[in-house]
Amino acid sequence: MKKILRAIIFLLAPSLFAGTFFSGETGLASSFVNKKSFALDPALVFSGFLGGQLAISKSFSVQGEFSIQTGDLYENGVTKEADAIFRLNELSGTFTQSFMGATHTLTLFKGCNESIGSQKFIIRRLGVEKYSSLLTESYLGQNGLSAYEVFGTGGSYSLTLRNLPASFGLVVSKNYENEEKNDDDAAQLNADLRFAMAGKFLTIDMLAGLGAPLYTKNSSNEDVVLLIDTLYLHSGADILIGNKYSTSSLFLQFAFDYFPVRKSDNSRDFDLNETHFIFEPRFKFGDARLNISIYNIPSKKIASAESVGKSFLIEDTFGLDMQMYAETMYKKHRNYTAGLHCMVGFEGKHFKDFGDSDFMDKMNVKFCPFTEIEADGGKVNVLLTANMNKFADSKPGAFKLHIGYKKEF
Image 1 (cartoon, rainbow, N blue to C red):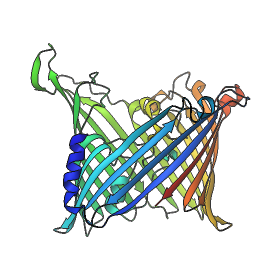
Image 2: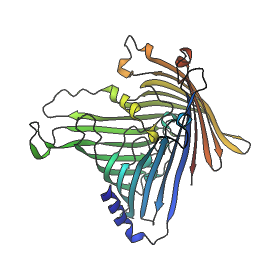
Image 3: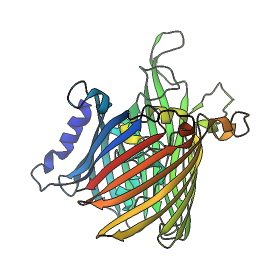
Image 4: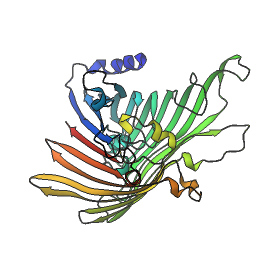
C-alpha cells in the first residue's frame, strides 16, 4: 500500500501546482427487512459510498472510492454498539498522454480497478454510456455486481486509437485472492489482456489472462527461490449486440476464474456451475422496455458479495428475471422510471442441475416493483422485494425495502 501511495505521489508531483478539478458520485442506501414474519421487528442497515476523480492536470488524475456499511441500527442503536465496516474499494493514479495517433494511459492501482461488469474501462477510454443489466445494478457503489473482479496491487497500460473506437490494454497485478490454492500466504501474480470496442451495433468490453500462485516452498516443505506448479485461466466480457435505441438487442455477460492448468493433469473439466453468465434479450416498445434475463451466479460470489458489489435482486444462484418498465416518464417537472421484476430463482442450483429431482424444491418466486425519481440533482431509487415462498411459509425476510440515492457532482 505504501509503495503504491509513494508511486502515485511521485507521478503527481510535477503537477501539484496546476489547476485541479474534482468530479465524482456519492450515494446512500438503506434496507429494511422483516426479521420475524408478520411482526413489526425490522432490521435497518445503512450503506454509503463516495467515489470520484481528481484531475490534477490534463495528464494526471487520481481515482478513488470508499464505502461504509453499518450493522442493524434498529437493534443496536445509532450511537451505541453500532457496528460498521469501512472499505477502500479503489485507489489509483493515472497518467494520460496522446501521441502517434493514439491516447496512452498508464495506471497504478490498489484495490478494485475497472473490473468486468463495472464497465469503467470502456466508459473511461471510449466514453460510451453504461449498458449493464438492471440485475447487477447497485445503489452502493459505482461498480455493481462484478462478473470478474480485477483486484489487488498492480498497474495497467492501455492504448486507445484516435480514428477507431477501440482500446487495447495490459494489466499486471498481485493479490492473495485465489481460494483454490489453499495457501493464504502465497501471492498470485496475474497478467491480463484487455480489449474494448464501441461500434454502432456491437459493444465489447473483455479481459482474458493467467494467474500464477507464487510459492517459496516445494511439496517437501523445502525452501525454494520460486515455484509455480499451476496456472489459472480467467476471462470475462460484457457484450451488447445492438444499442440502447434498437427495438431489440442482446446483452451477454460471462466470466470464469481459477480454471487450473497443470502439466501433470490432463483432466481439465470446465465447471459450468462456477461460471458467471447473464443472457438477456432486450426489447423496446416506445418508452416501454422488456428485458428477459437468464442468469447463473457462482455460489461463492453471492455469499461473499460485499457492500459495494451487492445486488439487491440476485439472491439465488440460478434463475430467470423478466423486467418490465417504462423510462423517461415526466410528471411534475421530474423524470422518473417505474417497473417490475418478475423473478423465478433456484437457491443453490445451477444450469447443470436442471434435471435434478429436487430442483423445483429450491424455487423462489419474487415480485419486485421499483422506481427511480430525479431529486436534487440526483436519483432516488426505491425497490421492494417480495418473496412469495417465504410469505406463504411465514418465514422471515419475505419482504425487503431498499431505498437508495445517487448523485453525480
